[in-house]
Image (cartoon, rainbow, N blue to C red; front, side):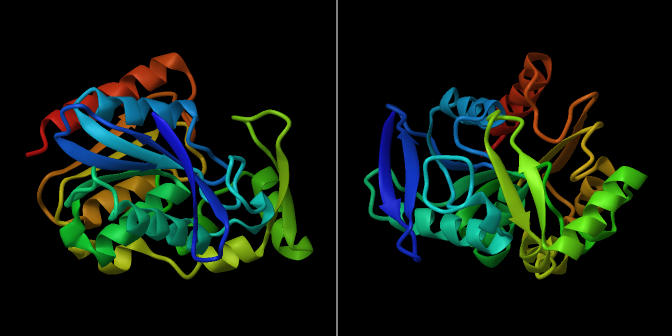
Length: 261
């Protein structure tokens, strides 16, 4: 395992980890979600599935998250996540282990980022796994909410920020700006979903209230007919942390990776 720091287009420091395979059969990039980081249990589980199948794997912390990279969580947007993904991919081109096409995996905000890249450059992507992905800003805004959640959402817009505490890193807190939602509204995977002709793996938990099952089904149905899969993990939340759910997640990934040509 090698950890280095590179600069993104805004001259911010990004922490990047490269785990090289001695017998490299493929290359994969695995991306965390909003407020996530490369060492999260779900990210490590998906990474391990690729490593166990002789892939070299690159993980990184975007700017504006609770990781080792520059920036402030308060300023996180789909745009900043997507641009950081592009910048890591561009940097990777100069490395000896780089190869195309590669696999892209992302969770939540990382999911929409890798899928947007795959829509823009489908020939570069061997296979795509947007897990518990944001499908569009529109669906994020219109999803069903409990009265308490609805009040929180309205206050977010009213006051211009919402207070957030990390469940994965206790003690890490932030104030996510409403401009995050305004930025998210600019994006919709369904607009160019027809370009996602590579194998696509979707996984979501039944207790995911952020990117719920019904939204994943909308994306699944819109994907071109072909090598696409949607798996639902009973009892799993948006960010998977429990060992029983992580084992199921690993199993889905391991089987999927083994089936890639």
